[in-house]
Amino acid sequence: MNLLTRALPLMLLLLSSAAMAQSNDALPDWDRLTPAQREEMVAPVRERWNAEPAQRARMLRNAQRWKAMTPEQRREARQGMHRFRDMSPQRRQEARALFERMRALEPRERAQLRERWQTMSPEERKQWMQQNATPR
Amino acid sequence: MRVLHHAAGHSLSATTLARLRTARHSPPGSRFASRLGSRWPWFAASLASLVLLVAVGVQPGPQGGTEPTQAPARLAAAGYVDEFESAYPSALAALDEDPDLYVWLASESQPMTLEQ
Image (cartoon, rainbow over all chains, first blue to last red; front, side, top):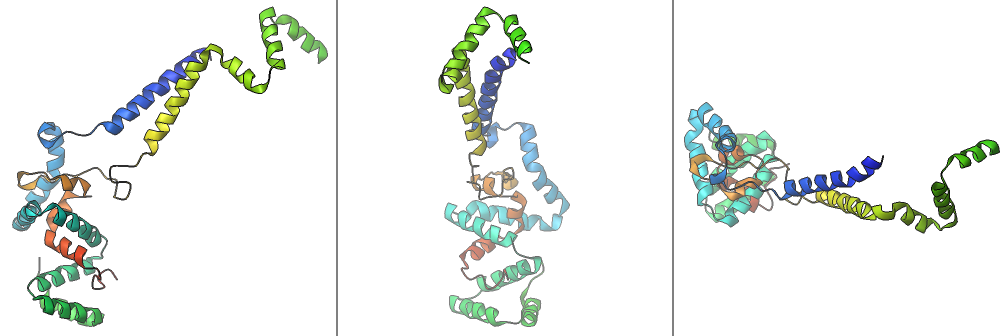
């Protein structure tokens, strides 16, 4: 018992020191990662790249676009990404099609399409999608 | 019972009996302090360690607790790594779609009932 009362504070001090070290231990910059750590980070992208040759151009184009964005654009994109992630697959398809269509329109025409979309029935939206959505 | 108590009292040393007597006649607070005796620094260290452990355990994550707490995934495609990617749940999701689609979605205050 006496040993425990003497050892307990030491154990707690060691535990708290370890916890503090863990919480403050930030991983280094990319150049200072170990080859194994880099491999873990790159592996998912490489697997996707190798598995889907048809998507390579799109992936590279998107990566280049991310790189060219300003910090503010990236912040907005991150918000939109969260929004997109929470959508159903059907809503995602609609979002893609609407975005592509609106990008080609003038501001006034965009407003018209936005207004029109709000009033469309599910069947009308389905028809609009068939006419406007481009396959990925 | 009284005989047993008497016998037990006789089996204790004089020092122990004196300590028990002092403890019985002192107020509760000082009884605790006297029990700690010279071990109070250890007690204080234990208490401080516990407080430290709790403080470290409950501190919020780097995203303030609002973002998903998955391990950061940094984009490595095209030979670069961007800091913003550390906040993403998946680097692959960032490559799947046109980033401008995400910007557009964020700009739509009324997202055209897309989420309905």
